[in-house]
Image (cartoon, rainbow, N blue to C red):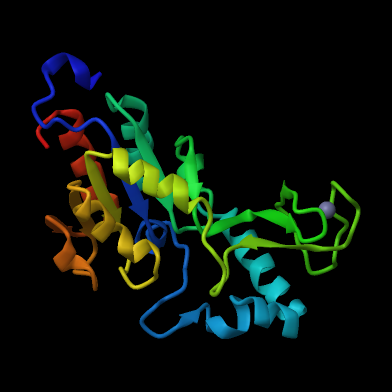
Length: 242
Ligand SMILES: [Zn+2]
């Protein structure tokens, strides 16, 4: 698609990091760094290994509700635009997301790297197998693999190591452009990717509703709702005007 009219912008490989701001326009409420609350719960009560040990019913119920809610939501124009870019870019687009929903995939994206896990997965702490899970976990169902009642949400909690960090760093190293979309710039290690990119000489762009804590690290910041500014940016790239 984009290859025939020259490569004036020289952009072949892109790493996009998406965060809460991309899912917000689909009606998904996520953890807010501003007040430390997630759907009226303190993160210490629902999003740490200690919380799960202390009150597993509360934690399972919390994620059961999130899992149910996600399945009633739909992708928005930002998700569809990124899926289109992945299909049509004359190079590679890796979508790294902090979001636990499956809206990128439902918009048609492939190869989405969920660094904070997936709400539609259950993780067996007995056999370590992850299974697609659309129902509830509160009743302690048996693991489809081993039969143990040892399933937890496949979510990276605070204090746990995000998934596939080596792959993310490798992709940033190979990238011509790093783009952060709808992230607060407050949650590490994702908030540090822009600095890694810059130190490697990779161009950096932020697309966000408002200036983030890390805005000053980016070569360029564009402000506005993701559903508007992401499709505009994608079209620019595909038109080779970037
Ligand atoms: Zn198991």
